[in-house]
Length: 335
Image 1 (cartoon, rainbow, N blue to C red):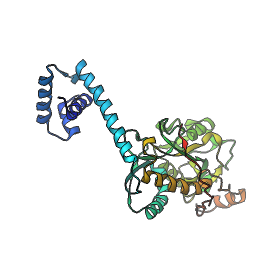
Image 2: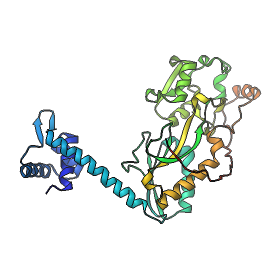
Image 3: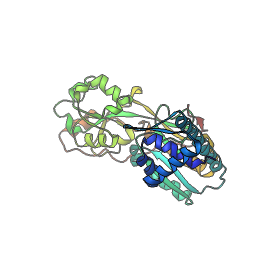
Image 4: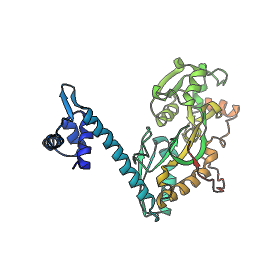
């Protein structure tokens, strides 16, 4: 009889195309993989892989086993999610994925208040600028800046993240800021893998690629570059407002916005710890909604800019968060 471990073995060899790679993936040694594969092929009376210079290539029988292994893995994950979803107590481990920008400038104090409210829940935060799979249980909950957080996920759209133009006032000494002539200034921008971000499209259309003198692949790095005076930057307002030395020059534009989502897998939404997190963090984020959307920050008057141009760069003050009442916004399908 073929065991689940046999399917895992075939899947690992097919994915890595080598015995050594499969051994590393499975946490066993090379000789064990070699012996088990030989035993399996002998018991089935057929070869599962062709040995070629490019590595181990699955035969049609091997490919069928890989497809079955994928299906079995999905079924096992589905069972795990359903069993986990039956947990009624807000305790245990909870894995949350988000990006570094949201974690550093927005989420850490909220996570601290969640821990204080639910000390029996062990929170693991997975920081990644790539979207981890909730379906494969890479994480239980995601807090994402995205227009499409996942067609199979459920949750709520918290806010629209407002982006504005920020810069150091002393950078405007030679060329006073003119929103109608953004090419008059040097700019810092995100790297090419962020080309489809609305704020970067907005910047390219109005200032041009040739005026972007510095690129970086994180929003945190973008804020640091603007604060260092390399150039003006388009930043999420909750970051620009919190970065010392920067003032906002252009208010959020509809072409620059992105949505902030709090989502989970449907099989987990009834889990006590998931429900507790979604309710608590959702409520806290809603309290900060005006700041996230950039509605609170007033543009500096021209007199202030003139004064700042002749003096050292300075901060813009504390980030004043709105205390919006939460009326219990119902979760909505993330579609």
